[in-house]
Image (cartoon, rainbow, N blue to C red):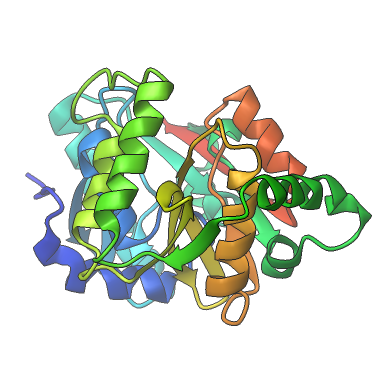
Amino acid sequence: MCDFREITLGDQDLITPILRRMRPISSEFTFPYLYAWRRDYNFRFGIFGDHLCLVSNSREAFPFAFCPIPLGGQHDSEGFKKAIEAIESHFREQHYDLAFARVEESRLPLLTGHYQSRVEVSPLPETSDYVYNTSDLAQLAGRKYSKKRNHISQFMRKHENHEYVSVGPENISECLRVFEEWCEKNESDCRHPDNCERLACKELLDNWDRFELKGGLVRVDGKAEAFTVGEKLNDDMAVVRVEKGNLDIHGVYTFINREFCSREWADNTKYINREEDMGIEGLRKSKKSYLPAFMVNKYLVRCHT
């Protein structure tokens, strides 16, 4: 029996160095993300064949595994084989159909090479990440971003008494209130208490001093109306985890996005990953409007053992 167990805060020092050596560009691979969403995805993990193996059995989707991650950052064929065998054993024990999901294009050959003709590969466009040049989001320069600058100008003219501050322990309660108000206005009822973006965000904010996060908060007339949270994904790339605000205030999202990127990431990153669109048309339109530099395409690999 393969020992896959729940992710706890005590696993941070074990998992974080493994993920950093991986130098991921896919948004899932940081410890804060895995911990914050551990209930939603029902994550389990184990170390087999000197590889980190992660499996998921979410209430909202089918069971799947991530492609095994080498502990030392370099692929080892014998260790990879042992890791795959452990995942296969776990899926057999649970009576699941074997599947790997959210597989980056660059890692597909590892799985197709191992299984050869015994796999079916399908794109998962709703999980693909949008990645932007940091300089584009921080500056919004040129004609291609003129509409974005206009939104910000309207916001600043209408709300002269506004301020941007970094998120810290002293204002986390304001961020939580913004999220609660966003949920109320958007009639977000959380179909299950463990499958909830609000819960994942609260996990990040509650562990602010433990996790290496950055955030921005915008106040209008002294009241917090928008906030955002992100972290480093690799040496060159940041990832935005949360962005919530008062939709009744025109331009506040555009404003906080630019300020967050220019103040927190312009000097230490080349790219910013703004995660996936989840197949939501409005979100897809918004993310495309910022003109991504490239997409991190991900795939589903169903295996026949």
